[in-house]
Image 1 (cartoon, rainbow, N blue to C red):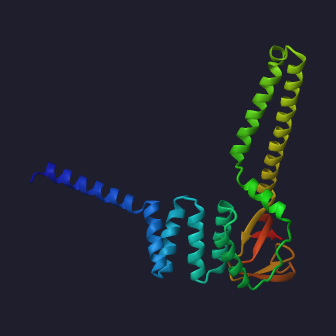
Image 2 (cartoon, rainbow, N blue to C red; image 1 turned 90 degrees about the vertical axis):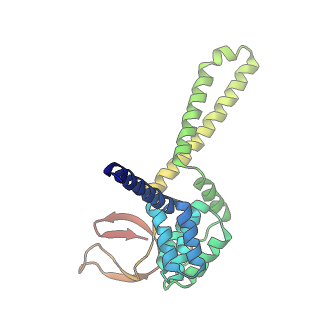
Length: 241
């Protein structure tokens, strides 16, 4: 066998290894492998395989849900709640997910009362979660275009008195819908800037009255799994509520 044949064989072997490794590392295969490890009680291995998918910036409610389950089995309560919360943002209302979060919160050291809300606000938030920023912005552009086109063509369309009233009605409807859409965009922007939430991962964290060791008064301690709202941040510190 000459050197040329040897080089070709080596190149083919390298290609086979690369294809095999990329195939074995595909999200679907890793997800199924993690499921098998989880069913066999190998929670660390299942957790590692699912986190490998997340490292590739793959987002899915089922993935976050399973990672949360693995962390819960490993008694990592904060991480479990964090991933279940991430799953709820994508999945919405789900009975299994809701039950898991309820069980996990019963194990929390800090027993904080949940905010009492009317069901209508939950439905409103669920509807808003279905609307992405891109969708709202695109819809606003389309509404502006339709409104501009309708007003520009009113001279050619409105040859009769009835035509004028019809154009006015459609124009007002488009205007109202446009303002509603802009209102949703404003709410999304407000949430993105002012409503950042997080879950305590550390076993215990001391909460001080000021961001300075030695000068800030110790107010209380929070423990793993407690959900907080981050108001503002600076290097090494977070103001929370």
